[in-house]
Length: 258
DNA sequence: ATGTCGACTGTTAGTCGA
Image 1 (tube, rainbow, N blue to C red):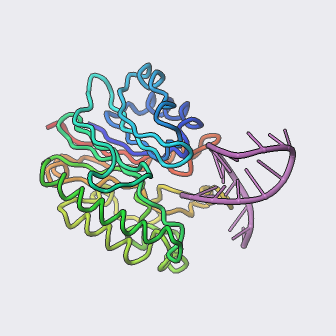
Image 2: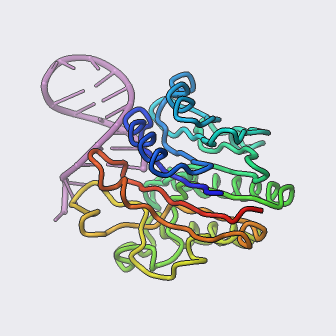
């Protein structure tokens, strides 16, 4: 079983790339973030024609998340948002796929530590933590995939000194990341790769991708039961090289069959 | 190094968010 996550930065613009990527990489589950389209604008027909089913939570202009699953897999027990946490920003969708509880999340960016969006980020992280804790308790096989907007370690950042204390790297954000880990989850990428310079996002500006100046902020956290089945976790840089790319590139987890 | 995208408002550029 393969599960992937990709922040597409507008599904309207990136749909052809998503379909191409799925053709090249027929993963079982693909979590998408930053759809940037309203609930009724989701390209359901095109996704289904490609052999996938989907559950999505759309929002005009901002945010928006989806879980795509390859037929004949199905999505069940779909939950939108974080239960009990009222949020006009649509950032989380959860579903059960092939026995795995899959949570797709677009974490708050926060803009800067002195921004008014930063306390919202910390409050949102606390709410998510509570939700993840309950889901982990209820489901042995659990995975949290998405754009975390957190670089957990200095080796996940191209210039740790310049980024020190900045948004994506600040201590409270990293602490929130490790509280998720403390729930019994593992950063699947780091099960297999301890190298630095392994990034999932590069700024569009200043040829940051060509210079490999990026940040690893897209993650797949998995429960112990899935850790035991994990065979590989890879960042696929190919779509970042395409014309008119998303600024993020996919991360793919491969699990052994049960 | 205020650079590049994408969406929106509502023109042919400015604003916001990332």
